[in-house]
Each structure stands twice: as structure tokens, then as C-alpha cells.
View 1 (cartoon, rainbow, N blue to C red):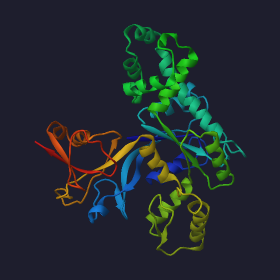
View 2: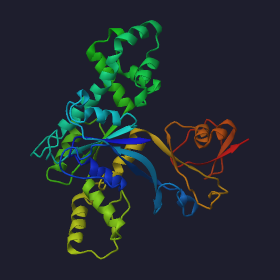
View 3: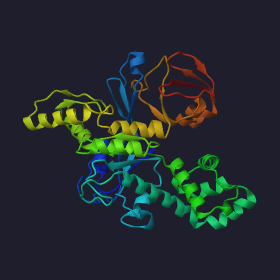
View 4: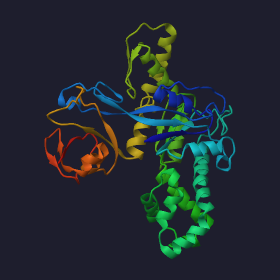
Length: 393
């Protein structure tokens, strides 16, 4: 799974990325700090099942703190987007090419209104314009891909009736599936013969396909700055259909760095931290400001962890599943509950078996719920937090 960070220059993408991954990336206030995409590992936070079994887990990937398991997901911070990117303006062509493999987008918006659409310093800029222009650029991206070969395969589709495979093939490099195409066709209400679609109708289809295949959440960054909270509330009213999470990437980065340095104990996504080191006056003042302006004001804390969780579990509808046996929670090396995997929503026990190993799927007999010891058939639909043992021939 790959989560792409998008947005204009100077929206705080690089800070958000560094806060989420603690990767060593350049952060600056000028446009196009990011030229080549930065890749790293972020983590979604879930309830670990070690508390259910009364043990302490040893994750092979990620980590666990106080019963909260942090499961890795790949992240990519791409070059800042400016209006006209779909036509090659700025770093548009590179930006769009970098995003092809992303499963979902996090659009980092400067909620303070202190930078314009190109990342230049201004006062009282309306961040709603950033959401609107990015929507246009991404829609145009999909529209241009469709339009290149539209006339040739639209007529063939009319004759052969194989619309979904043709479109999915056209978008094969963007991870668009036939199921995505069919789902869009059921909901957009377009004429049955694609060759009769107008340019506006084709754009309507392209936009719906983009939203289906590349869902997006808004990180309303810099919400702790002047007018940040006010602009965030306006965005929620202007875009009620979007997931919008208030964020302060600067605050999250400061807390994670302080924790890394041993000054505080901080669990990402929590609204509290514990001071454990000697703080000088400047450090104490900085932490007090974060607590007063961010942690005490927003249920999401700094918002960075909340955005990642929402992208994976609310947008993409993924589940987190533990491979485990009620009689043996450890692996051959003695690691307790070493793995936690992310699977698409709707996955079954058989899907999980194939995910673990092809032979497990081919020789599947049953699954056993490690918590209840109940036997489950191959059609059992998984739920987040399940712990399953796969029994094979």
C-alpha cells in the first residue's frame, strides 16, 4: 500500500512527511523544496491483541506501545503541485507520473491562508482554492488519459460491449480495476453508448473514476496558526463531502523529536505526553504552546496520526489482521505476535490464507479464531482485530 502526499509548494507537505516517518528530508519555506519524491514508512495505529492474551508482543515490523500497535505503510512525498500541472506547468508531468502507484492521496493544505496557489507568501488566502484547483488538475489528468484514445475504443465498446476492460486497460498504470470502472458507471448516470458522450460527460466520468480509484483526504495543516481554526471550520462547511482533518505537522514533528531525544514520552496520535527529561525554558515553553494550542483544542491531537489512520481505514477500507494460534502465539524464534497485516475490506479467511502463502490457500481446510477457538470456513468475512490460525491439508 502506498499513500501519496500531494499539495502546493509550502503547504507543509515535507514537514508532514517527516513528522509521519521521521525520515531525513529537506524542509524549507520556499516553493519546490521537494524535487524528487521522498519515500518512507509511516504507521497506522491500531489496538494490539497482546492485551487480550495478557502477553507482550514483539513486532517484526513496526512497533507497539502501551497496547497500541503501529503497522507500517509506505508513504511518498512528491513535488509541489501548482495550477496547470496537468498541462506540464511547474513540475506537473513529474508530479503526476510519481503518483501513478499511490492507492490514496493525502492533500496537505495550508489552512493558515499565508501562502497562495504557488506557495508564495500572502495574507488571507482562501485555502478552499487549493482544494478546488487540485481537484481540477487531477480530473484533467484522468480526462487527458481517457481522451487520448477515446474515439477509437468508444466505438469498439459500442459494438462489443466491453467498456470496463477497455478503460481499465487504459488506466492499467494507475491501478484502476475493472471493478472500479463498473462501480462508477452504476453511479454517474451517463448515456449507455460511450461514443455519444459529450466532452462534459467524459469529464464527469473521468472525475468520478479518479475519486473512486484515487480517494483523497484533506490534512488541514497549520491549523494552530492565526486564522487556521477559522479557515478549517469554513472548509468543513464548503466541502461537507470530504474528509478534512485539522493538523499541525510542526507540532507532531516537535513532539516526536522530543520523544526521540528522551525529553518526553509521547505516543503518536495521543493528546498527552509525559515529561521525563530536564527541559530548558525554551523547550518547556514550546511544549506548553503545543499543548495549549493543539492538543487541548483538537480531539485528533496534532492530526498527523489521525490522517494516516483515516486514509487507510476510512478511505481505503482496509482491515488489520493478526496471524495467531490460541496454543502458540510466538514464531519459531520466540517472537510473540510478530505480525499484523493490512488486508482490503471484504477479505475472507481464504483470502487471508492466500495472502500468507499460496500453498495455504490451495490447501485450506479451515481457519481458527485464536480468541474464541471457533472454527471458521473459507467464506468467513474478516473483521479488524481478528487473530486467525490457518489449518491446511
